[in-house]
Length: 307
Image: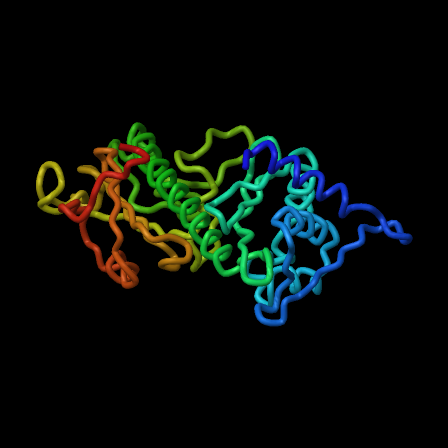
């Protein structure tokens, strides 16, 4: 079945289901299958219609019927802003399609930018229903992907900030050096970020990484400066700090705040500007915290997004 036809069917279903009752509100009737504990539908278009209307109504009981008892794991109403909800509904009114994933699964695609709902509609013995369990896995994959991309960009921002920092004598001591910390102590320029007054030149690193909540990561990742490099780095093993000054290079490692939830891959970079990645596993946080040197052996591979 063609994509345009599916869009037409879904749009027609919405117009049909949105016929108002005597109270003037859309009349939503959900038939719950007692075996799976969720609403089932004769067609995926009817399921799509119901989802749009229930999201618009923000009825928790209807969401429980539509997505199951664990609906908050895929659609936490208290975390969805009014702006995001309105943007979704506006996009759905402009365009709504059902994208086949084989013969027994459909994905809702809304708006001109074709945003895809991660919760698929699947067919079972009693009809079509929303697979919230698979939806949760898809949401997790998306979150990890976003966080890992943000971590790569943050690592590159650190590299750029260090290069900028070392271009000037920041401490008026007649020496050019790299920063040994991300955030400067108050009233100093010893780190890559410091507060500035209106009209003053910004610090090399912006406030986003510096403003993270203590004990929590930035976009799901922690970051730590490394003070040396190992034998697998270009130039061999040596320390970056001599006589208390970081003058011979710099490096950084980034690792997931919650492995498998906020991210999977860990990332390293040094003054060469090449970002490497490796899956350090569930115990990666301990590995990263114990790491003393930037040492990209064969287990570390260049990150494809930036290589």
